Structure formats: C-alpha cells, structure tokens
Length: 595
Image 1 (cartoon, rainbow, N blue to C red):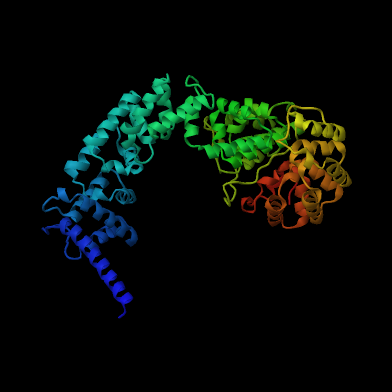
Image 2: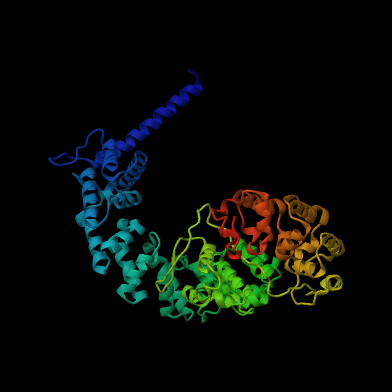
C-alpha cells in the first residue's frame, strides 16, 4: 500500500472512531437503567431513539437522525448537569404524552421537537410544567397556547425565571394590559420573545424620548412588531434618517411608518428606486413629498414602482406633481384595486353612465363595499356581467369578502403565476407634453413645438441628450407608417424616450414584427395610437414573448390580431406566457366578443 493509501486509511479509521466515541459518550448518559415498564435501551440505543422518533412522531429516517444529532450536541454541552438514572427514551415518551394532553396533535409535536430537540430531555415537573402553567395563568390557553408555541418553539428552551418571566413583565409594562400582552405575543415572529428586554424595551424608550406617545407605539407593536426588534444602535440611526434625510417629523403620525419602511431598505436599494422615479421625469423633491405623505409608497419593489408609474403617467397622463400629492395611487394594490377599478370606470364612461372627469383616485380610496354600491350594482342592467368583468379582472383569488360580510362572486384563474393578465382599458384623459425644464433643453423644446406643435409644459424627460435626437427622422418614419401629427404627438408625450430611438435598429424591427403578424396599415396605426407605450418596449424581452403568449391562448394569428386591435383592453407589458390562464372568452368580454 502506498503512502497516499495509508494516509487515506488512517483518516477513515480516525473519523469512524470519533463518530463512535461521540455517540457512545452521548448514549451512555442517556439510558442508565432499564426498569419494568421502561422503554428498552442497550448497545443499539442510537437506533432506539431514532426508532422512537420515527415510530411515535412520524419522523423520516433523515429527520430522526438530524434531530438525534442535535440532541446529542445539547446533551454534551450539559454534561455537568447529568442526572443519575435518567432515561431519555422514557422521558421523551412522557414529554410527547404531556404535549398531547395540552392539546398538541402529533404533527404539531413533531414540529416542536424538530425545532427544539432538547425538549425531549426536559423534566416535566421541574421544567415544562411550570412554563405551561405560567402561560396559561397569563391567559394563553387552548388553541391560542398551541399557536404561540408553534410560532415560538424556542420558548420551551428558555429559562422561566431567567428569560420568560422578565420578558413578559417588560411587555406588560409597555403594553399596559394583560390582554394586549397576549395579543402582542401571538403576533410576534419566531423566538422574538427572547429579545424583548434586549431590544424592544430600549427601542421603545428611544421613541418615547422623541415625544412619541406610548399609545401610538402600542398600536404599531400590535400591528407589526418586527421593526421594534432591531439592534438599538441601528434603530436610532433609522429614526435620525427618517427625520433628517426624509423630513418626517417624530410628531407626525407617519413617523413610525417611515421607520418601519426604512428599516427594510438599504442605501443601494433606495438609490435604485430613486432612479426608477427619475427615469419618469420625477425630481427628488417629488419622491420625498410622496414618502412624507405615505412612506409605504417606497416599500414596493422597483418593478412594481415602474409598473405603476408607467400606467399612471404613460397611460393615464398623470404628472409627478399630481401623483406625489395622491399617495394612495402608489400605495394601493396595483393588481387588485387600481387596474380593476380603472377598467370599470372606463367602461362606464364610454357608455356615458358616469361623468367623464370622475377620477380614479376617488374610486381607489373607496372600500370594496363602497365601490360595489357606487359603480357595480347600480349599472349591472346597463352593462351586463359588469360584476363578473370586475371580479375576473382582479383574478388573484376565488372569493373576496369585504368587511361588511358581503360575498363577491369571482372566477379563480388557473394559478400559473402570481401575476395574471391585467386589463387597463387605456384612454388617456389628458394630453401630456414635453418641453424644456432647463436651459440645456431649450433646443429640444423648440424642436418639439416646431415639429409636433406641443404645448410648453413643466414636465421634462429625464436628461435627454439633444445631440442624439432624431426627431425629423422619427417624424418622417412614423408619417410613412400612416400616423398623423396628433397621433405622433400623443405617442411622444407618452413615450419621450422614443425620441432617442434609432429608427433602423429599434423602431423598424418592431414595426416589421407587427406587420408580419398580419396587422394592416390602418390596424397598426390604431394599435400604436391607442397603445403608444408599445414602441418603448423591448422587442425580444417584451413584445415577442407577449405575442407568443397570446398565440398560445388564442390558437391562431388571426385571433391574436383581433385581440391586438382591441388593445385598449390590455397592457402588453404585463403579458407573460406563464401568466395567461384559461380565459379566452373573458379576454374581451366587456365588448361582447368571444372566441
């Protein structure tokens, strides 16, 4: 045998001996006696414990091995407190029976043991029993008690007098009543009870030092406690940033909301979100104003912020100043509230059933029952299937129940994805325009006003480079495709970045794609003018996948063309192949067509 072989054999023997010695050390202290009625143990006690976990609690062999290994490490760390005559397997059986008597099912006991294996070595009279009694006397019993333990299995590993009792007493001091203590504990995330005295108490003191009332703090703890369990140094830094950088005063009712949002955002993420806003022509002052009105507007992902801005600005023609003062536009659920309600308002306006200037913002601010009573039920005779159109467009749940208890019928779509097709029914209510906001943009202003007869406006595109603009070439190209000046003006207003697009490398391939699909010149002009943002989408990243998704659902190109001709019902950017489900007929239900 060579040198390498001898070293390999030596390593294998040492590793095997180490494993045997570790298990022998553990199990020699676990099972000392075998008395009448006890669970048998012997040289194969390793397999006995694992067999117990598999047979009594339904563990898999892999889970049983993992749990027994964790328990072995715990027992080794507790060697100085070994109890003579202690039978681990008998104790584990007693613990299981005790938890069962307290209302835990076998799967729940399995979850607790998996999270806190050392519970199997806990003495019921000295350890588990007193802890259970403490929580029950606090007011946690039955299903509530089981819920808390399942959310915080680590509680059963804490010392009653060293950790649990001090934490509960500190909570009682903060929350003011036993009922609110119970509500707070039930809402805590896993194992945060151990951090009450270490983090929560100190962070609450910091807030009170800034003049924030204990009532406001209690309310936030009950609604969302996790922000209060940050390191006190970080928490103080976030408080300072909320006031100094974002301009949210501690006296504002939104200060705690601002702290909550900022805790979840690092500087890199914040800058990325600023860039998204700036790409739509926003000044930083607009974003700061929006945040001060509703901090949660900045909590959305960059993708969702971009989708909302694209819809509200490109499709509806809203400007940054308007959106910044109507914070709920950016804070409401885009999928379940803004888009479905816009669809309903658009349909009602087209039929002359509601006034044309009724704002989406007012509809968004309504509760579900208020919206139904105001815009659905009164018009179901005039617009057949209006309720179905509305609920189908929500699309993410089978049945929604509002606070008044009224059930809203809905169709559940096949859940290929978290997102589904969104109906936007786009008809911009205001005609946007682009002009110079700085001296460097004066040439662009003159070019646009001269070529497209745009009206001057304070809204400017984000840092365009006038030297790279191809307005005359773009104008000529679009006119050759059959678009008139008013239509081109509307397109440029909605998609200002189009001014920097290279006709041959960018626009022409898009045009050719749709023409090859079968759109006639007049149909193409209609689609582009009603869905102007489509020229700003990536051909391979957005347009092609969206059309392929429609083709898969609509069966043939002829039907795809029919759908695209009714493109005011859709936002093409939100179509993904995995997002389409089985609603061919529902796609254009509002217009009465079917396939």
